[in-house]
Image (cartoon, rainbow, N blue to C red):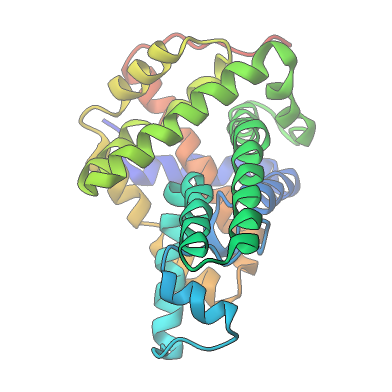
Length: 281
């Protein structure tokens, strides 16, 4: 059985061996995909909201009637940083909601604009953001075995023989997550059940959809609660990152967190005697 402490010790060594390239990889992923919550003000940190009252007041240039204290804001941002990775794939759904409300308000031009924005966000998620996330996992899997691992490793998943399969499976994972989140608890459970899919794709980009989901489910069986506690163990780091306006995340927490989750994947794979399949060199 794996222990958090062991994973983190190994992860720290990986980050130390590949510090600068790990920072660059995580920064690019944060900037382009929103994978690391509030650590970087990237293209995903737009004011996406499903609250029509918020939308209406933003359009009218007004402030909502409720204000948070500085402490409450920091706590909220800490929670957002931890939930963002799970909710990021659904952000284009937020735009669709906003568009529907705009049409309801007879703001046709704004509704059309938001629909276009939703379509662009959807295409970007499918074709760029999700494969890039898989590329990041690929980098950290390589970094476990090499010193000064090259950043260019992340582009390996964009090879034409891999790209489409990765994009489709990641998109389906996002859709399933979104549907399960309608049940709230089911969404949380499935988020952990699907946690290993990006790593599986990073090692075997041509794997079939059904097999990828089955492998992730098998690896996370009886490990969801421990993984949840592993996530909680980074809350303190995330709170400190908020206090430094994301600087600590960029310089340490994001690589450390990702390297730890990579070590978790390797351990679970070994425990389940899953055969390692690498990308073709």
